Image 1 (tube, rainbow, N blue to C red):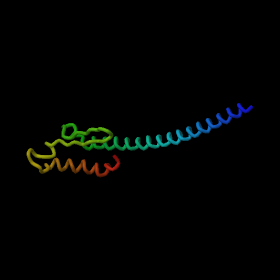
Image 2 (cartoon, one colour):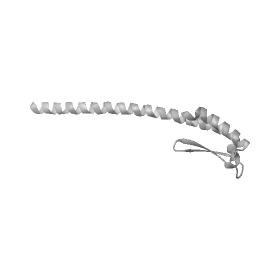
Image 3 (tube, rainbow, N blue to C red):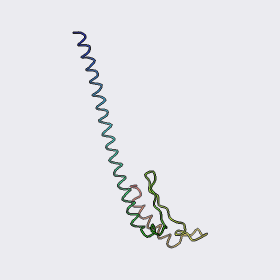
Length: 114
């Protein structure tokens, strides 16, 4: 009888330990699901900004004047020097100024979300 009681106590301790582990894993799973949802929202916003920039800069992208590159979860907008500056000059061209204004306005509105 004593052996059965020892075995029963051992099994009860094991059960409590497993229940604690299960509770910890449930909490961890909930936190991971929440984080995955937040990452999904950020990804959707980033994709929306990219799509809007592609629409906004469609002509420039087709002419090779602007490049969009996504790397490590970040969207990079690269403007060709020939569009933004005249050769051997530091002053913006009128087209470059207009392009920077359009891109800047979009990034100023959406940039904090990306």
